[in-house]
Every structure is written in C-alpha cells, then in structure tokens.
Amino acid sequence: MVFPKEKQHKLSEEEFVNYCDTIFEAISNMEGSKINLSLWKMYLDNVKIMGKIKRKKDKLSFEMRDEQMYKNVNYWIKENPNEKIIIWAANAHIVRNDNVLKKQGHNFYLLGLKKLGDYLYGNYPDLLYAVAFTSAQGATLDISNPDKTNIINTPKRNSLEGLMSGRKICFVDLNLFENNFGLGQYDSQLFYTNTICAAKWSQHFDGFIYIPEMRPSTPLWQNNKK
Image (cartoon, rainbow, N blue to C red; front, side):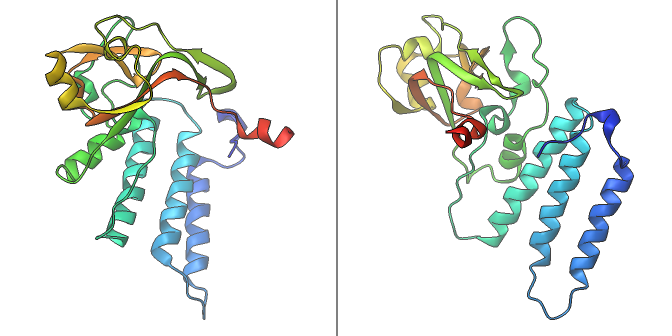
C-alpha cells in the first residue's frame, strides 16, 4: 500500500478513522451472512494504524505499529489455543529488552522503543522461542528504498559473526554459544545486519540462524517485470 505524503492526504486522520468505523458498521449490519466480525474488526484496525503511521514517521509510529502487530498475533493465539504458531518478522521487531543494548557509534532511533518482542515476552514468557538471522558478509535490501542495498559491516573477530566465521549455514542456541565461548557482553549485528550493538544476546533472542553471506531478496516489482 502506497500512501500519499503527509500534506497530500485528502482526508484528515480523524476522517480516515471514522471512514473505517463506517465500513465496519455497514459490515456488522449485513443480514443473512456468516461474517466473522472479530476478524473484520482486526483487519480494519490494521488499516487504521497504517493510515495513522504513514502520515508521520517517528518513534510513536513505530510503537503503534508493533502494538498492533502484537494484537494481531494475540488474536490468532486465542483462536488456536492448542496450536504452535510461527511469527516471521524482522529481528528489530522480535528483539526484547533492546533498551539495554549498547550501540557503537551514533544513537540508533529504534533503540529503547517498545516492540513486538517486548509484548510477546511480557504476556507469554514461558511459551516462546525467538530465532534471529545474522550474517558475516553480503548485503540486504534497504527497507525504505527497494533500489538500494545495505552492505553488511565486516565483523570483529570476537563478535558473534566473527566467531562464526568459516562455518556453513547453521542454527545455534545462544545459551550454548555463550557458554561454549565464555561470553558475557559481545558485539553482534543481530539487531540490524548493518548496525553493530554490544549485548549479552541471549537476553534478547533464544537462538540464531547463521548465513555466511547474505544476499538481498528480489523485490516483487522486479519479478513482475520478468
């Protein structure tokens, strides 16, 4: 979904939200149909949040998005109480307690914000296993510019990625990793692949999948041009 820029909206935020409420009211009043109203409410709540955060990119927008992500996950957990669920999201959303990460260099604006991982571990602390992805070299897409790639920083020898150097694609439990190397706080690019942070990483993730060389995914629009 591509939203107009902040000053190009034809509806105010209040009008946009009211319009979504009007749609839900119309759906609720439909007769003779088997509509899952709770599901439709979640759909429209997502549209409301997207309509709000696309008007302004700031810390509040990020936290609003992650709170809504948690509400979506919580909906499906309650709908399927006896099932296992896989949640696929960026490391920066799944990470928990990131306010205690020590950033090397300039202050990264997402540090310290309440994220999906904080909500999940606050409400389901004993039922989760969070797996991150990391790499020692290569590149990833820039989330705000699909035509741009971010080059992964060369890791230090005593960083997580440096210690994994020479290994093939593999899964690693972080507690076992830290115990094996006797690690306390150490550098890693688990938060974002091109942002180095120091932490005891088992406090933020449970395990990780190591990829020796990360390659940018192909944007959907490029696939459609083939």
